[in-house]
Amino acid sequence: MNGYWPSATVEGREVDFLLLALLLVSYAVLALVFGLILLYMVRYRAGSGVSRGARSRKTWRFEISWTAATLAIFFGLFIWGGDLYVRLFQPPADALQIYVVGKQWMWKVEHQGGQREINALHIPINRPIQLVMTSEDVIHDFAVPAFRIKHDVLPGRYETLWFQVDTTGVFQLFCTQLCGVGHYSMTGEIVAMSQPDFEKWLANGAGPEGHEDMAAAGKELFTAHGCSGCHGEGGVGGSPETTGVQAPALSGLYGRSVKLQTGATVTADDKFIRDCILTPDKTPVAGYPQIMPSFSGQISEEKVLRLIAYIKSLKSGSRT
Image 1 (spheres, rainbow, N blue to C red):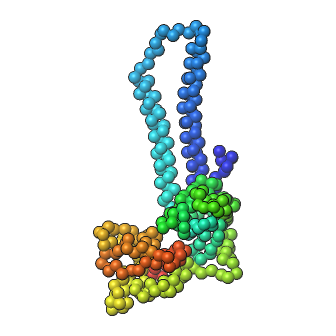
Image 2: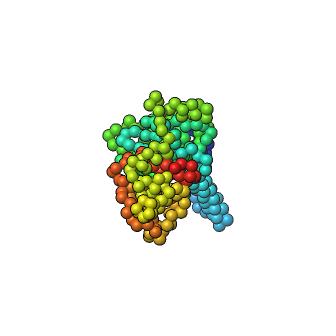
Image 3: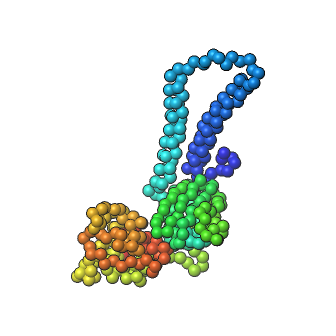
């Protein structure tokens, strides 16, 4: 199968093996069923002298063995597929995060260093890559056949996907969800390169106008949109004495558990922070008055991603 359409990822080759196993087992069952049909058609054809009066003997051991063997084979395939599916959505801790925004009809990519691409994605080989994806308008679907991956990209939600490419090359990227009249043009390329070449590309990937680190760009937005007026400079938090309002600290927020006014506890991940920015009524934090205004319709998904990058950078306290 790999010789027909080789996969460029380790996980993709395992998907191929799983599909091959499913096909072989299915073909074996089909061959058994249709083989028996053909055998009986020939054996008991019109004019055949085979006796039709003698009843064949079968035992309960045969029935139990056949049923148990079939159940074990298909249950084993189910466990294999389930394990693979779970692993495909659990990226390694050292995965390189890259943000992808789908929009009619293009893929907009932004790297942590601020390098931006349209309908292209440059990545290093032999390193796990995690894509954080969202849509600005309708449902899209990020699919790379050579990696054996595809995932819906939904408006208002962050979807993640990870993979690791082990060979250099250029691979086709498609949207496999009918997303409008220009759906056919929503294609692109994934360029897999060696780590040194990738670092060279990062240094020059934004073109002659230069680029700005996502967290640095997020810091500018944090100030420009007045976030620091309530949360304080550097996201240290606000109080009636300092900022005039009681606002939670954002420094060290990312990845922490947060208790809501509803009593529920959530993890402060990308989705939580996005909800706090665009739909704060959904995530009122316990101990603070719900006075956070919604920025929905005021800032784009790309700017939200930069704000998240800035808040994530505050985790270590290195950026103020």
